Length: 356
Image 1 (cartoon, rainbow, N blue to C red):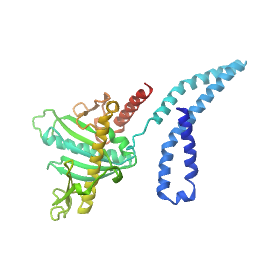
Image 2 (cartoon, rainbow, N blue to C red; image 1 turned 90 degrees about the vertical axis):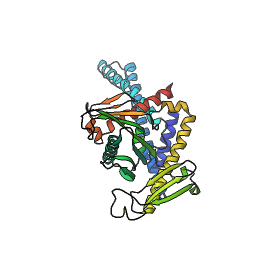
Image 3 (cartoon, rainbow, N blue to C red; image 1 turned 135 degrees about the vertical axis):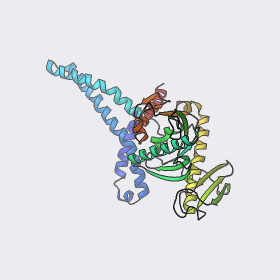
């Protein structure tokens, strides 16, 4: 492990030298690539320096205990030794976590699809609540939301909504959100005051670049139609909405949120690439069953992952047994308390597998 880290340190020093070279600075693509690499390597290098400082401190304290006769100095050395030994295991574990193989999609934007499930109008209202939750989380994280398509139910809910979250590292945070979300509450449409259970399905897909997906445009059929719903004066008067059908897979994507047919077509292609990329990933994951079982739910749309219980004000993530009695905060976009727990559980599982 430490030989590998030494190589990382050498590469980090090389990046630092290159990044200030005039020819690199003038080449924006190379400069940005090196900046990203520096950002990825720096935490490992800093943690390794901390680890080396601790191990050097342990050696120095042991030397004092062996060579010194002054009792006061020896007592100080013992105290420092105990402190350093209590830290060294934690720092080594943190270093191992930093060295875990990184998901190649972690830095990407994500395309999110939320669909109402069981529960009729209440499920559509819950889908709208989830959209607001992710939108608020996006704002607090410094990301950006771009709605691509939506299908409203007339009560302020969504039968379906598709949107992109743009920002460096968006996928690393949101990839655990794929699955079935369940809500337990008294619906606004229910006059009897009974608690109902409804569901919505969330799909999180990394945005796929053109080079990552072999998409033959001859396999695609585009249809245009008149958009419906909210969207301005052009919605019901021009054929700006686009329906894209991928013939080999039967995937259908509709986009109507832009007034421009060209922009809707571009968004539809982004969604299609993401879905095709997801299919490829699922196929690869299926071929690596052991790896799939070790994941903390990063793609299975049929898995019930979380329950939002309004009467008791709690959120429960079933994958890691996490219950938080701060439902209002979570629904207002304070998702880090859930996401951080999922990331920690995922890392621990991978680390245990690596050490086993």
